[in-house]
Image 1 (cartoon, rainbow, N blue to C red):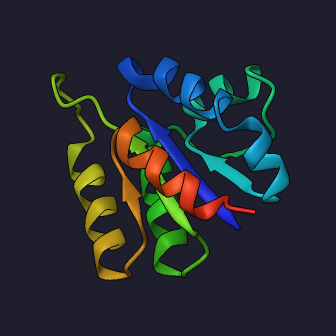
Image 2: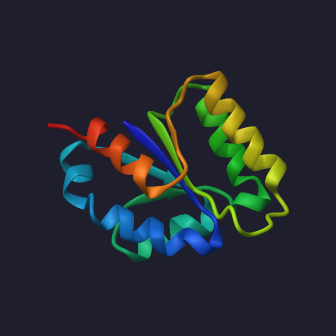
Length: 123
């Protein structure tokens, strides 16, 4: 199972903290993590194995959307910062649309991500 991870700058620490709470479940469930570049670097520094793509504004969001369109992802976790401006907002909207079109579960905050992670990593 492959899970894509993205976090806006103000949410990267939240992503690492969230993943740390699921470390054992992720290992037991044999989950592959893929992330946009900068988010992936933060995740990697926290001791997780992650495939890093381009940074979001440089095409990483589009790379993850392509993976979703090809049905390569079990789910996408995108911790968005709704209180900040993002120059690549069209890419964010495109990714969310692709997830909806291809019925890929999408969590945009820790509460929804927790529910999905618990469901996906049940042993």
